[in-house]
Length: 508
Image (cartoon, rainbow, N blue to C red; front, top):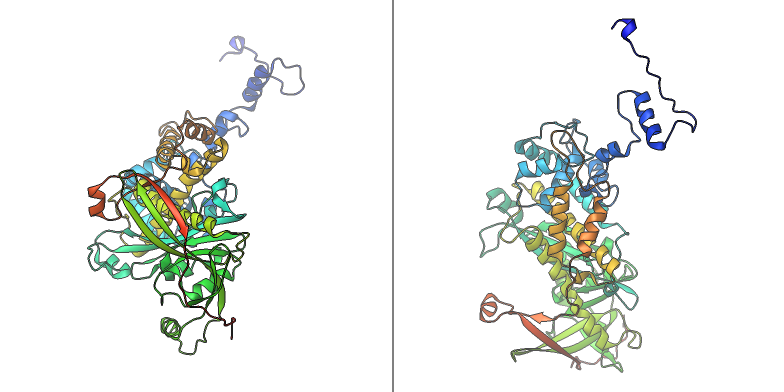
Protein backbone atom coordinates (compact mmCIF):
# COMPACT_ATOMS: atom_id res chain seq x y z
CA UNK A 1 0.00 0.00 0.00
CA UNK A 2 1.41 3.47 -0.80
CA UNK A 3 2.62 5.39 2.19
CA UNK A 4 0.26 8.33 1.57
CA UNK A 5 -2.71 5.97 1.89
CA UNK A 6 -1.55 4.31 5.11
CA UNK A 7 -3.37 5.10 8.36
CA UNK A 8 -1.55 5.17 11.64
CA UNK A 9 -3.21 2.91 14.28
CA UNK A 10 -1.99 3.38 17.87
CA UNK A 11 -1.26 0.22 19.82
CA UNK A 12 -3.54 0.15 22.88
CA UNK A 13 -1.74 0.30 26.16
CA UNK A 14 -2.22 -2.55 28.64
CA UNK A 15 -0.38 -0.88 31.49
CA UNK A 16 -1.93 1.41 34.04
CA UNK A 17 -5.56 2.07 34.96
CA UNK A 18 -6.29 4.92 32.52
CA UNK A 19 -7.07 2.85 29.45
CA UNK A 20 -10.84 3.29 29.61
CA UNK A 21 -13.57 1.01 30.90
CA UNK A 22 -12.74 -2.63 31.80
CA UNK A 23 -14.40 -4.02 28.67
CA UNK A 24 -12.31 -1.77 26.47
CA UNK A 25 -9.14 -2.61 28.36
CA UNK A 26 -9.80 -6.35 27.88
CA UNK A 27 -10.40 -5.90 24.16
CA UNK A 28 -7.32 -3.73 23.86
CA UNK A 29 -5.22 -6.39 25.60
CA UNK A 30 -6.46 -9.10 23.20
CA UNK A 31 -5.72 -6.89 20.17
CA UNK A 32 -2.25 -6.09 21.50
CA UNK A 33 -1.55 -9.76 22.16
CA UNK A 34 -2.08 -10.58 18.52
CA UNK A 35 -3.34 -13.92 17.15
CA UNK A 36 -3.03 -17.13 19.12
CA UNK A 37 -4.53 -18.86 22.13
CA UNK A 38 -5.14 -16.89 25.30
CA UNK A 39 -5.12 -19.34 28.18
CA UNK A 40 -6.83 -17.04 30.68
CA UNK A 41 -10.01 -16.40 28.71
CA UNK A 42 -13.22 -17.76 30.24
CA UNK A 43 -14.79 -18.45 26.88
CA UNK A 44 -11.76 -20.47 25.78
CA UNK A 45 -11.39 -22.20 29.14
CA UNK A 46 -14.91 -23.48 28.60
CA UNK A 47 -13.65 -25.53 25.69
CA UNK A 48 -11.02 -27.17 27.86
CA UNK A 49 -13.13 -27.61 30.98
CA UNK A 50 -13.64 -31.06 32.43
CA UNK A 51 -16.55 -32.87 30.83
CA UNK A 52 -19.65 -33.70 32.83
CA UNK A 53 -18.83 -37.39 32.53
CA UNK A 54 -15.49 -36.78 34.25
CA UNK A 55 -17.12 -34.47 36.81
CA UNK A 56 -19.35 -37.34 37.90
CA UNK A 57 -16.24 -39.26 38.97
CA UNK A 58 -13.96 -38.44 41.85
CA UNK A 59 -10.79 -36.65 40.81
CA UNK A 60 -8.06 -39.01 39.68
CA UNK A 61 -10.36 -41.82 38.54
CA UNK A 62 -9.38 -41.64 34.87
CA UNK A 63 -5.74 -41.10 35.84
CA UNK A 64 -5.90 -44.26 37.97
CA UNK A 65 -7.20 -46.18 34.97
CA UNK A 66 -4.43 -44.82 32.75
CA UNK A 67 -1.78 -45.73 35.34
CA UNK A 68 -2.92 -49.36 35.61
CA UNK A 69 -1.42 -52.04 33.42
CA UNK A 70 -2.67 -51.90 29.83
CA UNK A 71 -1.45 -52.38 26.29
CA UNK A 72 -1.79 -48.80 24.98
CA UNK A 73 1.55 -47.77 23.48
CA UNK A 74 0.88 -44.84 21.12
CA UNK A 75 -0.54 -41.42 21.97
CA UNK A 76 -3.51 -41.72 19.67
CA UNK A 77 -7.12 -40.57 20.03
CA UNK A 78 -8.10 -43.86 21.68
CA UNK A 79 -5.46 -43.74 24.39
CA UNK A 80 -5.90 -45.16 27.89
CA UNK A 81 -7.81 -42.12 29.21
CA UNK A 82 -10.25 -41.87 26.30
CA UNK A 83 -10.84 -45.63 26.27
CA UNK A 84 -11.66 -45.50 30.00
CA UNK A 85 -14.20 -42.74 29.34
CA UNK A 86 -15.68 -44.81 26.51
CA UNK A 87 -16.13 -47.74 28.89
CA UNK A 88 -18.02 -45.58 31.39
CA UNK A 89 -20.14 -44.06 28.62
CA UNK A 90 -20.86 -47.50 27.19
CA UNK A 91 -22.08 -48.67 30.61
CA UNK A 92 -24.30 -45.61 31.03
CA UNK A 93 -25.66 -45.90 27.47
CA UNK A 94 -25.95 -49.65 26.82
CA UNK A 95 -28.30 -49.11 23.86
CA UNK A 96 -25.55 -47.30 21.92
CA UNK A 97 -23.29 -49.31 19.67
CA UNK A 98 -19.56 -48.72 19.56
CA UNK A 99 -19.93 -45.96 16.95
CA UNK A 100 -22.52 -44.15 19.08
CA UNK A 101 -20.33 -44.37 22.19
CA UNK A 102 -17.35 -42.97 20.28
CA UNK A 103 -19.39 -40.11 18.81
CA UNK A 104 -20.57 -39.20 22.30
CA UNK A 105 -17.19 -39.35 24.01
CA UNK A 106 -15.29 -37.60 21.21
CA UNK A 107 -17.73 -34.71 21.57
CA UNK A 108 -16.96 -34.19 25.24
CA UNK A 109 -15.05 -31.00 26.08
CA UNK A 110 -11.56 -31.38 27.41
CA UNK A 111 -10.51 -34.34 25.28
CA UNK A 112 -7.04 -34.15 23.70
CA UNK A 113 -8.46 -33.93 20.18
CA UNK A 114 -8.71 -30.91 17.89
CA UNK A 115 -12.11 -29.79 16.58
CA UNK A 116 -12.94 -31.63 13.40
CA UNK A 117 -10.80 -34.65 14.29
CA UNK A 118 -12.28 -37.73 12.67
CA UNK A 119 -14.11 -39.95 15.13
CA UNK A 120 -12.50 -43.42 15.34
CA UNK A 121 -14.46 -46.38 14.05
CA UNK A 122 -16.16 -49.05 16.12
CA UNK A 123 -13.51 -51.53 15.00
CA UNK A 124 -10.80 -49.22 16.36
CA UNK A 125 -12.60 -49.01 19.70
CA UNK A 126 -12.92 -52.79 19.79
CA UNK A 127 -9.14 -53.08 19.42
CA UNK A 128 -8.65 -50.36 22.04
CA UNK A 129 -10.78 -52.33 24.51
CA UNK A 130 -8.55 -55.33 23.91
CA UNK A 131 -5.45 -53.24 24.62
CA UNK A 132 -7.11 -51.77 27.71
CA UNK A 133 -7.74 -55.07 29.50
CA UNK A 134 -9.39 -55.54 32.90
CA UNK A 135 -6.92 -53.77 35.21
CA UNK A 136 -7.67 -50.12 34.23
CA UNK A 137 -11.43 -50.60 34.54
CA UNK A 138 -11.00 -52.17 37.96
CA UNK A 139 -8.63 -49.39 39.04
CA UNK A 140 -11.16 -46.77 37.96
CA UNK A 141 -13.96 -48.46 39.91
CA UNK A 142 -11.87 -48.83 43.06
CA UNK A 143 -10.64 -45.22 42.89
CA UNK A 144 -14.19 -43.88 42.66
CA UNK A 145 -15.61 -46.37 45.19
CA UNK A 146 -13.14 -45.08 47.79
CA UNK A 147 -14.37 -41.48 47.58
CA UNK A 148 -15.55 -39.95 50.85
CA UNK A 149 -17.31 -36.82 49.60
CA UNK A 150 -20.70 -38.49 48.98
CA UNK A 151 -23.02 -37.66 51.93
CA UNK A 152 -24.62 -40.68 53.58
CA UNK A 153 -28.27 -40.75 54.53
CA UNK A 154 -29.35 -41.00 58.16
CA UNK A 155 -30.83 -44.45 57.45
CA UNK A 156 -27.35 -45.73 56.66
CA UNK A 157 -26.32 -46.02 60.29
CA UNK A 158 -27.57 -47.91 63.34
CA UNK A 159 -26.20 -47.79 66.90
CA UNK A 160 -23.53 -45.41 65.62
CA UNK A 161 -22.29 -48.00 63.10
CA UNK A 162 -22.17 -47.77 59.30
CA UNK A 163 -24.53 -50.35 57.78
CA UNK A 164 -23.23 -52.46 54.90
CA UNK A 165 -24.59 -55.51 53.10
CA UNK A 166 -22.92 -58.37 51.27
CA UNK A 167 -24.52 -60.58 48.64
CA UNK A 168 -24.02 -62.00 45.16
CA UNK A 169 -25.72 -62.25 41.76
CA UNK A 170 -25.03 -63.36 38.19
CA UNK A 171 -24.81 -61.58 34.82
CA UNK A 172 -25.54 -63.14 31.44
CA UNK A 173 -23.09 -63.20 28.53
CA UNK A 174 -23.24 -64.09 24.85
CA UNK A 175 -23.74 -67.75 24.05
CA UNK A 176 -20.13 -68.39 23.13
CA UNK A 177 -18.08 -71.60 23.57
CA UNK A 178 -15.02 -69.72 24.82
CA UNK A 179 -17.05 -67.84 27.43
CA UNK A 180 -18.85 -71.01 28.43
CA UNK A 181 -15.51 -72.73 29.03
CA UNK A 182 -14.16 -69.76 30.99
CA UNK A 183 -17.16 -69.03 33.22
CA UNK A 184 -19.52 -72.01 33.14
CA UNK A 185 -23.17 -72.48 32.18
CA UNK A 186 -26.06 -73.44 34.52
CA UNK A 187 -27.33 -76.97 34.04
CA UNK A 188 -30.75 -75.67 33.02
CA UNK A 189 -29.45 -72.66 31.06
CA UNK A 190 -27.97 -71.94 27.67
CA UNK A 191 -25.83 -68.83 28.25
CA UNK A 192 -22.65 -68.57 30.32
CA UNK A 193 -22.89 -66.57 33.53
CA UNK A 194 -20.50 -64.38 35.43
CA UNK A 195 -20.82 -64.39 39.21
CA UNK A 196 -20.49 -61.16 41.15
CA UNK A 197 -20.26 -60.50 44.90
CA UNK A 198 -20.60 -56.98 46.22
CA UNK A 199 -20.29 -55.00 49.43
CA UNK A 200 -22.87 -52.18 49.52
CA UNK A 201 -22.86 -49.05 51.66
CA UNK A 202 -26.42 -48.43 52.89
CA UNK A 203 -26.08 -44.70 53.45
CA UNK A 204 -25.20 -43.96 49.82
CA UNK A 205 -26.43 -47.12 48.05
CA UNK A 206 -22.97 -47.26 46.42
CA UNK A 207 -20.67 -50.27 46.08
CA UNK A 208 -17.71 -50.16 48.45
CA UNK A 209 -16.08 -53.17 46.80
CA UNK A 210 -16.84 -56.08 44.50
CA UNK A 211 -15.34 -59.39 43.41
CA UNK A 212 -15.87 -60.93 39.96
CA UNK A 213 -15.60 -64.64 39.28
CA UNK A 214 -16.99 -67.52 37.27
CA UNK A 215 -20.44 -69.00 37.60
CA UNK A 216 -18.62 -72.11 38.83
CA UNK A 217 -17.29 -70.08 41.80
CA UNK A 218 -19.51 -69.81 44.85
CA UNK A 219 -20.70 -66.52 46.34
CA UNK A 220 -18.87 -67.47 49.53
CA UNK A 221 -15.55 -67.79 47.71
CA UNK A 222 -15.96 -64.35 46.19
CA UNK A 223 -17.17 -62.89 49.50
CA UNK A 224 -13.88 -63.92 51.10
CA UNK A 225 -12.10 -61.57 48.66
CA UNK A 226 -13.98 -58.60 50.16
CA UNK A 227 -12.40 -58.97 53.60
CA UNK A 228 -9.97 -56.00 53.11
CA UNK A 229 -12.96 -53.63 52.94
CA UNK A 230 -14.34 -54.68 56.33
CA UNK A 231 -13.24 -52.77 59.40
CA UNK A 232 -14.15 -50.99 62.65
CA UNK A 233 -17.32 -48.93 62.68
CA UNK A 234 -19.15 -51.25 60.28
CA UNK A 235 -22.26 -53.36 60.86
CA UNK A 236 -22.59 -55.90 58.07
CA UNK A 237 -25.82 -57.69 57.12
CA UNK A 238 -25.80 -60.95 55.16
CA UNK A 239 -28.23 -63.67 54.16
CA UNK A 240 -28.12 -67.21 55.54
CA UNK A 241 -25.98 -68.64 52.75
CA UNK A 242 -22.85 -66.79 53.86
CA UNK A 243 -22.36 -68.19 57.34
CA UNK A 244 -19.28 -70.31 57.95
CA UNK A 245 -17.30 -70.25 61.16
CA UNK A 246 -14.00 -69.41 59.49
CA UNK A 247 -15.63 -66.50 57.61
CA UNK A 248 -17.39 -65.28 60.76
CA UNK A 249 -14.11 -65.31 62.68
CA UNK A 250 -12.11 -63.71 59.87
CA UNK A 251 -14.52 -60.82 59.21
CA UNK A 252 -15.25 -60.09 62.86
CA UNK A 253 -11.48 -60.03 63.48
CA UNK A 254 -11.29 -56.94 61.23
CA UNK A 255 -13.24 -55.01 63.87
CA UNK A 256 -16.50 -55.04 61.92
CA UNK A 257 -19.71 -56.13 63.61
CA UNK A 258 -21.89 -58.76 61.95
CA UNK A 259 -25.65 -59.29 61.87
CA UNK A 260 -26.10 -62.37 59.72
CA UNK A 261 -29.03 -64.64 59.17
CA UNK A 262 -28.40 -68.30 60.05
CA UNK A 263 -30.15 -71.39 58.77
CA UNK A 264 -32.92 -72.82 60.94
CA UNK A 265 -31.73 -76.44 60.78
CA UNK A 266 -30.40 -77.87 64.03
CA UNK A 267 -27.10 -78.95 62.44
CA UNK A 268 -26.64 -75.97 60.13
CA UNK A 269 -24.78 -73.91 62.73
CA UNK A 270 -22.84 -75.58 65.59
CA UNK A 271 -24.15 -73.56 68.52
CA UNK A 272 -25.54 -74.22 71.98
CA UNK A 273 -27.18 -71.81 74.40
CA UNK A 274 -25.00 -70.37 77.16
CA UNK A 275 -27.47 -67.87 78.60
CA UNK A 276 -30.95 -66.51 77.87
CA UNK A 277 -30.89 -62.72 78.04
CA UNK A 278 -33.63 -60.45 79.36
CA UNK A 279 -34.90 -59.44 75.89
CA UNK A 280 -35.37 -63.06 74.81
CA UNK A 281 -32.16 -63.28 72.80
CA UNK A 282 -29.45 -65.77 73.78
CA UNK A 283 -25.71 -65.94 74.14
CA UNK A 284 -24.54 -69.02 72.26
CA UNK A 285 -21.30 -70.93 72.07
CA UNK A 286 -20.17 -71.83 68.55
CA UNK A 287 -17.80 -74.78 68.24
CA UNK A 288 -16.62 -76.18 64.89
CA UNK A 289 -17.87 -79.72 64.41
CA UNK A 290 -15.77 -82.54 63.01
CA UNK A 291 -17.84 -82.50 59.82
CA UNK A 292 -17.27 -78.78 59.33
CA UNK A 293 -13.53 -79.12 59.93
CA UNK A 294 -13.39 -82.03 57.43
CA UNK A 295 -15.13 -79.91 54.79
CA UNK A 296 -12.84 -76.95 55.44
CA UNK A 297 -9.76 -79.15 55.15
CA UNK A 298 -11.09 -80.60 51.91
CA UNK A 299 -11.73 -77.18 50.39
CA UNK A 300 -8.29 -75.95 51.44
CA UNK A 301 -6.52 -79.17 50.39
CA UNK A 302 -4.78 -79.30 53.76
CA UNK A 303 -5.54 -82.16 56.17
CA UNK A 304 -3.48 -80.60 58.96
CA UNK A 305 -5.69 -77.56 59.58
CA UNK A 306 -6.47 -77.29 63.30
CA UNK A 307 -9.95 -76.86 64.73
CA UNK A 308 -11.17 -73.27 64.74
CA UNK A 309 -11.31 -71.57 68.14
CA UNK A 310 -14.63 -71.46 69.96
CA UNK A 311 -16.49 -68.17 69.83
CA UNK A 312 -19.44 -66.58 71.62
CA UNK A 313 -22.18 -64.86 69.63
CA UNK A 314 -25.69 -63.64 70.27
CA UNK A 315 -28.71 -65.33 68.71
CA UNK A 316 -31.97 -63.49 68.01
CA UNK A 317 -34.88 -65.72 66.96
CA UNK A 318 -38.13 -64.15 65.80
CA UNK A 319 -41.13 -64.75 63.59
CA UNK A 320 -42.34 -62.41 60.85
CA UNK A 321 -46.06 -62.38 60.04
CA UNK A 322 -46.80 -60.60 56.75
CA UNK A 323 -50.41 -59.52 56.14
CA UNK A 324 -51.35 -58.06 52.77
CA UNK A 325 -54.26 -55.76 52.04
CA UNK A 326 -56.15 -58.59 50.33
CA UNK A 327 -55.87 -60.76 53.45
CA UNK A 328 -53.04 -63.12 52.52
CA UNK A 329 -50.91 -64.10 55.54
CA UNK A 330 -47.43 -65.62 55.54
CA UNK A 331 -45.30 -66.50 58.55
CA UNK A 332 -41.53 -67.01 58.51
CA UNK A 333 -39.09 -67.97 61.26
CA UNK A 334 -35.75 -66.17 61.20
CA UNK A 335 -32.55 -66.65 63.21
CA UNK A 336 -29.96 -63.88 63.39
CA UNK A 337 -26.41 -64.22 64.68
CA UNK A 338 -24.62 -61.08 65.76
CA UNK A 339 -21.44 -59.89 67.41
CA UNK A 340 -23.45 -57.21 69.25
CA UNK A 341 -23.73 -58.97 72.62
CA UNK A 342 -25.17 -56.34 74.98
CA UNK A 343 -29.02 -56.45 75.10
CA UNK A 344 -29.18 -53.03 76.76
CA UNK A 345 -27.26 -51.31 73.97
CA UNK A 346 -28.64 -53.46 71.15
CA UNK A 347 -32.22 -54.65 71.92
CA UNK A 348 -33.34 -57.80 70.14
CA UNK A 349 -36.43 -56.13 68.66
CA UNK A 350 -34.36 -53.37 67.06
CA UNK A 351 -31.91 -55.88 65.61
CA UNK A 352 -34.78 -57.89 64.12
CA UNK A 353 -36.27 -54.77 62.54
CA UNK A 354 -32.85 -53.65 61.29
CA UNK A 355 -32.28 -56.85 59.33
CA UNK A 356 -34.84 -55.80 56.72
CA UNK A 357 -32.25 -53.31 55.43
CA UNK A 358 -30.42 -56.28 53.95
CA UNK A 359 -32.92 -55.99 51.11
CA UNK A 360 -31.22 -52.78 49.95
CA UNK A 361 -28.52 -54.82 48.23
CA UNK A 362 -31.17 -56.74 46.30
CA UNK A 363 -32.57 -53.40 45.09
CA UNK A 364 -29.04 -52.31 44.12
CA UNK A 365 -28.58 -55.48 42.05
CA UNK A 366 -31.93 -54.78 40.39
CA UNK A 367 -30.78 -51.27 39.45
CA UNK A 368 -27.47 -52.61 38.20
CA UNK A 369 -28.90 -55.38 36.04
CA UNK A 370 -32.28 -54.06 34.93
CA UNK A 371 -32.28 -50.27 35.20
CA UNK A 372 -28.77 -49.45 33.95
CA UNK A 373 -27.87 -52.43 31.77
CA UNK A 374 -31.47 -53.15 30.72
CA UNK A 375 -33.65 -56.24 31.01
CA UNK A 376 -32.67 -59.05 28.68
CA UNK A 377 -29.42 -57.39 27.61
CA UNK A 378 -26.22 -59.45 27.90
CA UNK A 379 -22.69 -58.18 28.42
CA UNK A 380 -21.04 -57.09 25.15
CA UNK A 381 -17.61 -58.66 25.68
CA UNK A 382 -16.64 -61.76 23.72
CA UNK A 383 -13.60 -62.69 25.82
CA UNK A 384 -13.00 -63.25 29.52
CA UNK A 385 -11.00 -60.03 29.93
CA UNK A 386 -13.58 -57.89 28.10
CA UNK A 387 -16.46 -59.33 30.13
CA UNK A 388 -14.68 -58.54 33.39
CA UNK A 389 -13.74 -55.09 32.07
CA UNK A 390 -17.34 -54.31 31.22
CA UNK A 391 -18.59 -55.49 34.62
CA UNK A 392 -16.26 -53.08 36.44
CA UNK A 393 -17.52 -50.26 34.18
CA UNK A 394 -21.13 -51.26 34.94
CA UNK A 395 -20.43 -51.14 38.69
CA UNK A 396 -18.81 -47.73 38.25
CA UNK A 397 -21.83 -46.46 36.31
CA UNK A 398 -24.11 -47.64 39.12
CA UNK A 399 -22.01 -45.78 41.67
CA UNK A 400 -22.22 -42.60 39.58
CA UNK A 401 -26.03 -42.62 39.58
CA UNK A 402 -26.30 -43.69 43.22
CA UNK A 403 -23.88 -40.91 44.18
CA UNK A 404 -25.99 -38.30 42.38
CA UNK A 405 -29.09 -39.57 44.19
CA UNK A 406 -27.34 -39.55 47.57
CA UNK A 407 -26.09 -35.99 47.08
CA UNK A 408 -29.56 -34.78 46.08
CA UNK A 409 -31.11 -36.59 49.06
CA UNK A 410 -28.70 -34.91 51.48
CA UNK A 411 -29.46 -31.48 50.01
CA UNK A 412 -33.22 -32.04 50.29
CA UNK A 413 -33.04 -33.72 53.71
CA UNK A 414 -34.41 -37.01 52.36
CA UNK A 415 -33.37 -40.64 52.39
CA UNK A 416 -31.48 -41.77 49.25
CA UNK A 417 -34.27 -44.28 48.72
CA UNK A 418 -36.72 -41.40 48.16
CA UNK A 419 -34.78 -40.21 45.12
CA UNK A 420 -36.00 -42.17 42.12
CA UNK A 421 -33.04 -44.04 40.65
CA UNK A 422 -34.61 -44.30 37.19
CA UNK A 423 -35.24 -40.56 37.04
CA UNK A 424 -31.65 -39.77 38.07
CA UNK A 425 -30.33 -42.12 35.39
CA UNK A 426 -32.47 -40.48 32.69
CA UNK A 427 -31.43 -36.97 33.74
CA UNK A 428 -27.75 -37.94 33.87
CA UNK A 429 -27.92 -39.45 30.39
CA UNK A 430 -29.62 -36.35 29.02
CA UNK A 431 -27.09 -34.03 30.69
CA UNK A 432 -24.08 -35.98 29.39
CA UNK A 433 -25.54 -35.97 25.88
CA UNK A 434 -26.25 -32.23 26.06
CA UNK A 435 -22.76 -31.55 27.37
CA UNK A 436 -20.94 -32.33 24.12
CA UNK A 437 -19.20 -29.83 21.86
CA UNK A 438 -20.04 -29.11 18.26
CA UNK A 439 -18.25 -31.77 16.18
CA UNK A 440 -17.26 -29.21 13.52
CA UNK A 441 -16.19 -26.02 15.29
CA UNK A 442 -15.72 -27.29 18.83
CA UNK A 443 -18.13 -24.70 20.26
CA UNK A 444 -18.75 -25.43 23.92
CA UNK A 445 -22.13 -26.87 24.97
CA UNK A 446 -24.96 -24.65 26.12
CA UNK A 447 -24.74 -26.15 29.61
CA UNK A 448 -21.95 -23.70 30.46
CA UNK A 449 -18.93 -24.34 32.61
CA UNK A 450 -20.82 -25.91 35.54
CA UNK A 451 -23.01 -28.66 34.07
CA UNK A 452 -22.95 -30.67 37.31
CA UNK A 453 -24.78 -27.88 39.16
CA UNK A 454 -27.50 -27.92 36.53
CA UNK A 455 -27.84 -31.69 36.79
CA UNK A 456 -28.11 -31.52 40.59
CA UNK A 457 -30.85 -28.90 40.28
CA UNK A 458 -32.77 -31.05 37.80
CA UNK A 459 -32.60 -34.04 40.14
CA UNK A 460 -33.86 -31.98 43.07
CA UNK A 461 -36.84 -30.89 40.97
CA UNK A 462 -38.06 -34.49 40.67
CA UNK A 463 -40.86 -35.24 43.19
CA UNK A 464 -39.52 -37.52 45.97
CA UNK A 465 -40.84 -41.01 46.57
CA UNK A 466 -43.00 -41.92 49.54
CA UNK A 467 -41.00 -42.79 52.68
CA UNK A 468 -41.55 -46.04 54.53
CA UNK A 469 -43.57 -47.64 51.77
CA UNK A 470 -43.85 -51.42 52.23
CA UNK A 471 -45.11 -53.67 49.47
CA UNK A 472 -44.82 -57.36 48.67
CA UNK A 473 -45.29 -59.63 45.68
CA UNK A 474 -45.03 -63.33 44.91
CA UNK A 475 -41.58 -64.84 45.12
CA UNK A 476 -41.98 -67.19 42.13
CA UNK A 477 -43.11 -66.49 38.58
CA UNK A 478 -46.31 -68.45 39.15
CA UNK A 479 -47.13 -66.44 42.29
CA UNK A 480 -46.45 -63.13 40.54
CA UNK A 481 -48.84 -64.09 37.76
CA UNK A 482 -51.56 -64.83 40.31
CA UNK A 483 -51.43 -61.48 42.16
CA UNK A 484 -49.88 -58.06 41.81
CA UNK A 485 -47.71 -56.29 44.35
CA UNK A 486 -49.74 -54.88 47.22
CA UNK A 487 -49.21 -53.09 50.54
CA UNK A 488 -48.16 -55.26 53.46
CA UNK A 489 -47.73 -54.93 57.22
CA UNK A 490 -45.19 -56.94 59.21
CA UNK A 491 -45.39 -58.14 62.80
CA UNK A 492 -42.12 -59.24 64.45
CA UNK A 493 -42.16 -61.38 67.59
CA UNK A 494 -39.09 -62.62 69.46
CA UNK A 495 -39.30 -66.35 70.25
CA UNK A 496 -37.04 -68.87 72.11
CA UNK A 497 -34.61 -70.92 70.05
CA UNK A 498 -35.11 -74.39 71.62
CA UNK A 499 -31.35 -75.01 71.24
CA UNK A 500 -29.64 -77.44 73.63
CA UNK A 501 -28.14 -75.80 76.71
CA UNK A 502 -24.48 -76.00 77.62
CA UNK A 503 -22.35 -74.94 80.56
CA UNK A 504 -19.06 -75.20 78.67
CA UNK A 505 -16.83 -72.19 78.45
CA UNK A 506 -15.02 -71.25 75.24
CA UNK A 507 -11.95 -73.44 74.73
CA UNK A 508 -12.88 -76.02 77.36
